Length: 239
Image (cartoon, rainbow, N blue to C red; front, side, top):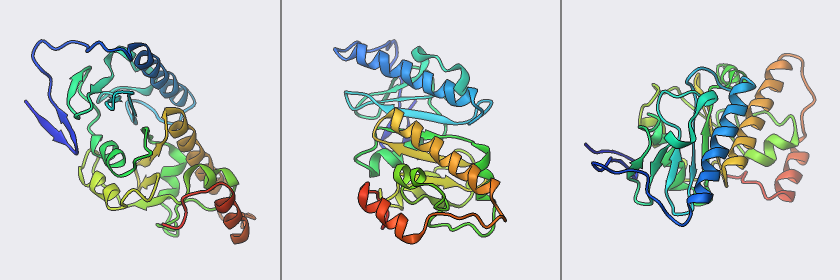
C-alpha cells in the first residue's frame, strides 16, 4: 500500500530491511541524538504522554521521523521511521500522522534540517488568549525569542493530523521558521536537530514569561531594541 504525504511516500517494500550505507555511523549518531533530545524535553515536561513529533534530515537527503503514537520519553533509535531521498518509507515504524507539518517545512524552507512539534502547556495557553497578535505570536520580552525564532505565526485550530495544517504552513511560502497551532502546540524548523530543539524550548520559555506576567504591564523590549536585534543577528523578521 502507498500513502503520499507531501513529497513523502509511505511505502514498505516486501522483505526490505535496514538499508546499509557509508553514512551508517553518522546516521546512528543522529538517531541517538534525536532520542536523547526528545527524552530531555519529555523529562522536563515540555510534552507529555504520546504527544509531539520530531524529524531530522539524513546526509543522503532522507528523513528520520518519530513513529506515530510514541512517547518522546521512550523513543527507540532503531524504530524511527526512515524515509529515503525520494520520500519513500524504507524502514522503521509508521511515521507520525502529522507528517504534513514536517514535509511542508522541508519543502518550503531550504535551510530546514529538522522539525519539532510539541504540546507545551504555556505556549498552548497563550494561544488561547483573545488579544494575541496572530502575525507576531510572542511578545518581545527577551532577545532570545527574537534571535532564535523570528516572528512566530499563530495559525488557527485544526483537527490533529489534518493535512490542512501542512497547507497552512505551505501558505507562508517558507517565510517563517516557527508557527503556533492554536489550542494545540508549536512547530519549529531549524538548521539541525539541536537548533530546532533549542528554538522550540525558547518559544515555550517566552510563552511562559508572557503568561506569568500577564496583566502586570511588564517592561518588554522597545521597538528600537527589537530592530537592533534583527539587524545585528540577521533575523528573519520582515515577512
